[in-house]
Length: 250
Image (spheres, one colour):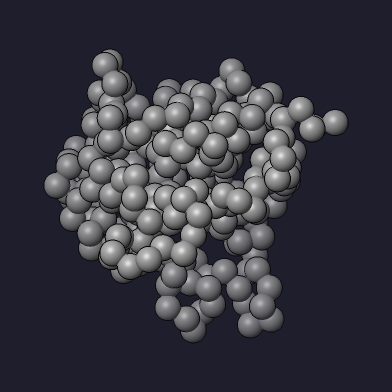
């Protein structure tokens, strides 16, 4: 029934909330828990405009649509991923609420877009370029490595898109936290909330969620850590609630 939306090598997965579906493929980088946690962590306005940078196959705009009536846009530089995102939007009959743009975020904002967004979300490439060989296809390499954009490109563009009082929410790796906070301040986004994500209670964090306020005053809150698995290797109740429940935010 849904073959009209997929191309060879693609599949349709269940997003586990509001009967949403998403198109994915083994050949490109699929979404993971990072995106799901970010979509719940971000402070999202009930109306207005939201931009998701590095949107990939559109998972974050789809998840955000369950929390707001705002107009949501996703920007993706890779043609194939942008196509998958558009078809996922169509599959879920969300064309009137979500727009996917194939665009280089370094060329943003366009005329009239400066300071016009209430919130920006981003799950950017995590790995800096080191000059070593990248043993991935180009789709996967660009999703994981700063090939198409750097962390500074992401923060700068987000800052330019946000109105005063608008919020930038990001998920990244903990070892880049100092860079994230420093760049936010450099580009006028004051860090406001940080939450570490730990695989298990006794393990180091492997993700960090960060939110900043455009032109905000200094006041950073370190939220309680989010633990993913309990001692029985099962999702803790909060993670279960994020995936299957109705909890609005982290």
